[in-house]
Image (cartoon, rainbow, N blue to C red; front, top):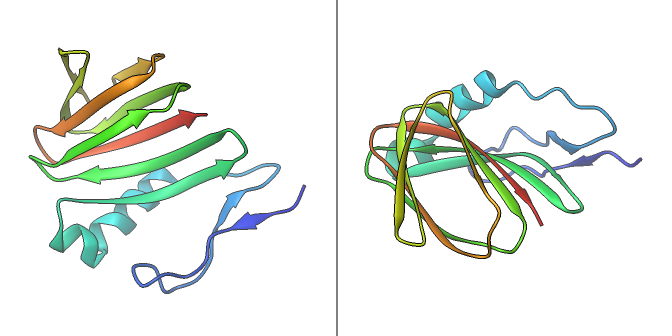
Length: 129
């Protein structure tokens, strides 16, 4: 397998980090600390890091300030939203569910869903396409 890495960006000029390999260890606490130290976290309502990306699956760590909204489509696969820190409201098909640290939401339908942070929150999003 070929190792895939991201490239340096304006938000992360330090360079690349692996996002796909035969075996990877993702230090989520370190990624949360990275997000909290970046200008994007200080100046906007959210910030995110792609933890893993390969054919058919993407894992993203998303930090959201209280009041921030993710307004996204579930594109037909299975998605999970694991709340690592904080408290959110997940809305799909007019139904709202609150979730807090340690809880996992699983969505298996096509359609639109919303995530709104009730307090500063960190989520691990897994999207299977």
